[in-house]
Length: 192
Ligand SMILES: *Cc1c(COP(=O)(O)O)cnc(C)c1O
Image 1 (cartoon, rainbow, N blue to C red):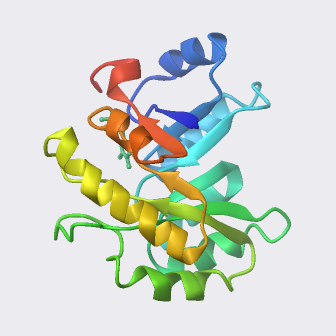
Image 2 (cartoon, helix red, strand yellow):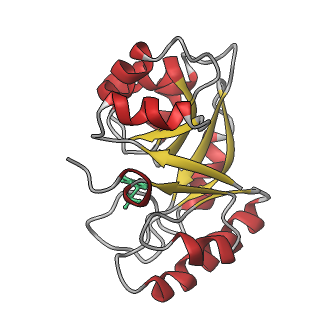
């Protein structure tokens, strides 16, 4: 299980403190912020940047350049924009699923994810490694069913990666098989 420390909106020195403590996996939501932080920390050669937020095609170049993985793939256009820049070094990606169908959330539905997978798996320059979800901010226990549904969908597609669980619900996510959790506030405190 990998712990991604979500450092979005946190100043560089907070990341440096975590690096000094031995941490290497960091999550960022915004493409330009990711670009700038990665540029500032190139001296740490083994950092792994996880791009975890929704992405626009015109900003895909920033993610393609530095990311170790992309967690919010929900459109073919984004897959093509990323993959076109990673042909030599395919980018591991998670398909984002909006499991409970909240209108406000990004991601495809559980019924659309098979079609998305069959399209993006053909795109050169990326490798689909799993599924990702942001569950509703309800009681952590209420996230168990969506996490389980994500795990079942991944199994059906033959995918082993499960990016699920935040500060709010990571314990339940781990119980339900998360291979990678994305935790911000319980590591860094509230975002400024
Ligand atoms: C901000 C964010 C997280 C981390 O949330 P915390 O509440 O700080 O743990 C995880 N995943 C995504 C996609 C996020 O945007």
